[in-house]
Amino acid sequence: MNINFPVALPYTWTQELGEVDVVVPVPKGTRAKNLTVIIQKKKLSVGLKGQDTILDGELCKEIKVEDSTWTLRGCSFPAIESLLIIFL
Image (cartoon, rainbow, N blue to C red; front, side):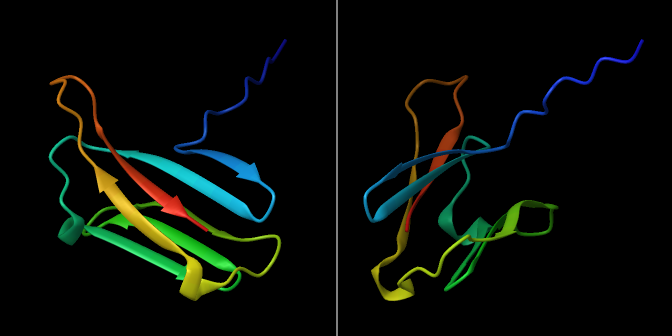
């Protein structure tokens, strides 16, 4: 018998009317210059330079690129990674 368990996504997201927030954990100590974040009308791509892409996919609806942004938040606890937060 084969049992297939769902694979955990490398990100979480929340959605409210007209707004989507995507949170991507990245290794502790990651700096903005180490990230590649591409936000397009129908596409979102996130990765660490020189490594495999963490997230790369087509969005179900067009977004306003000029209203979208991202930020990197560090954590003061040694064992917890930093968070890349994308606002679409």
